[in-house]
Length: 395
Image 1 (cartoon, rainbow, N blue to C red):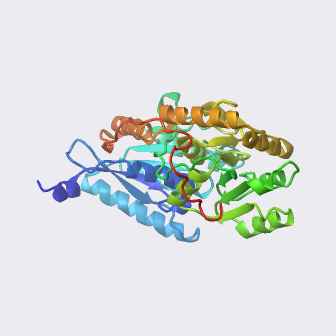
Image 2 (image 1 turned 90 degrees about the vertical axis):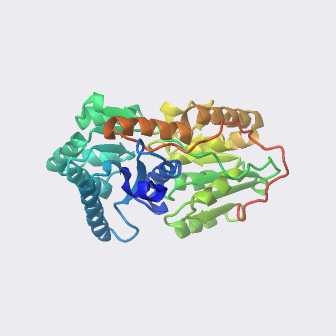
Image 3 (image 1 turned 90 degrees about the horizontal axis):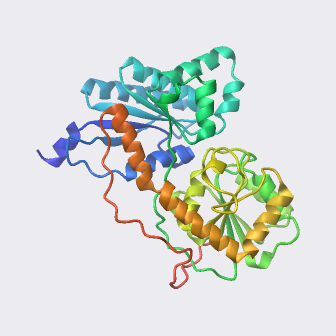
């Protein structure tokens, strides 16, 4: 059978969620999985396909996109080739859209994996009226398997949403190997923040920490990469006298973040709540030292002083002191870089993540995608012994 004809008749699995980079971590998780699958070679494997449920337009437009997604489910079910649906879910409107999608899957007799990414779902759920709480529990109860990022999420799903413990799996995300070569250390130290610029991510505290005394502004550069009210934060930084050494990149795609990460000495993420941010895993993959808050699933995955340095959320003096300490202490930074990279290889590689998802799909859907053939993972030094890479403009 010609390969193109076989592909047209092969079974497939939908990865449902946002399918544009503006979808943040949920998009990246799905995109990393889809990028990591091998071309179909035989009937024993399925193809991972994206299923857009939100779109890039206003919220009202998402209803049209959702209707289209439901139509795709129906067509896939009637064709007999749709093996199952892997639904990536967050809170707020994502909960409503994905809930409708899961209800449709069950009505069509399609198996479902619900993959919860939302750090904010517990407080959001608790604030819902009781009828909507009951509906939320019903949606989670319909999934064949519920995937969570760690033990805190597992407790919430089992104890508050009533999902049977045997149907809940902890599955830690993974990220690909870096593509951009790491720069050699230089006289200017570079601090990187990646994420949506917001209070939840701790951006006001980060700017306040950078405005405290003790900084060597001549030999330090800070880059904040992400969307949100960029101009408002740029004005705030200017009012604090930071414009000469603090740069706002704006929203950055995967390739740009990879390039920025390759230039960084430290990743800082002073969030007030998180799940397990992909940007931290990406920093570990690059061998970049991480300074973050021990919120969400982070303290279950990283150890303070071993693979990352922790600071309490909202503590501006401590954030400034810890960041200055990390920049000044080359031995501490080197240890975090080395041990963070080792942890990435052991737990957070895209190979490990793809295989774990594949085992789950095989169990729930009866079929899974084939992984792309990868060579052995080699340890990557914190700084490559080659000529320095050109500096990324603005960082």
